[in-house]
Amino acid sequence: MITSNTDMDLAKRIRQIRIDNHLTQEQVAKALDATPGYICNVENGRTAMSLRMLVYFAKLTNVTLDSLVGSMDSSYTATAIDNEIMGLLADLSDSEKIKLIKMIRIWKDK
Image (tube, rainbow, N blue to C red; front, side, top):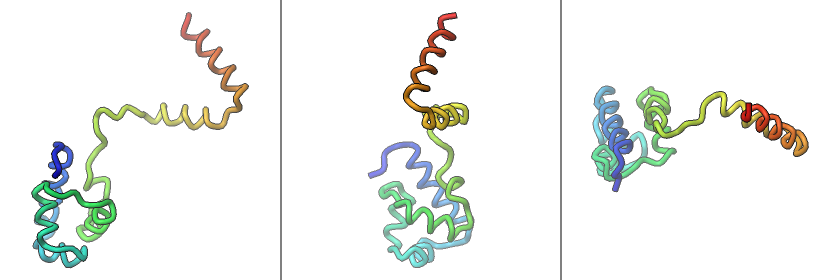
C-alpha cells in the first residue's frame, strides 16, 4: 500500500489528468493493457504504477513524465554546481585529486 504524501499526490495527479483528458478508468486500462481495477487502485493510492506504466500513461495523456511525477523531494540537495564539481573530479588522476585536497584545506583554513 502507498503511504507517503508524495505517492498520494501522484495518485491524485494521475486521477486528475485522466479526468482532464475526458478518459474513463476503463479507457485508460484498455490503452495501458491493464484492468480498470488496477487503475482504480492507482488512483486511490493502493497501488503504485511502474515506471513503464507511468511512461505509457504520460504518452496517453500528452503530459511529460517529469510534469506527471512532480518535482524532486526537497531533501535532495544536489545542485548544478555540485554536479559540475563531481564531473570535474571524475576526470582527475589520483595525484591531481591529492593536490586539490591540499588546496581546498589551505583555502578553508584562511
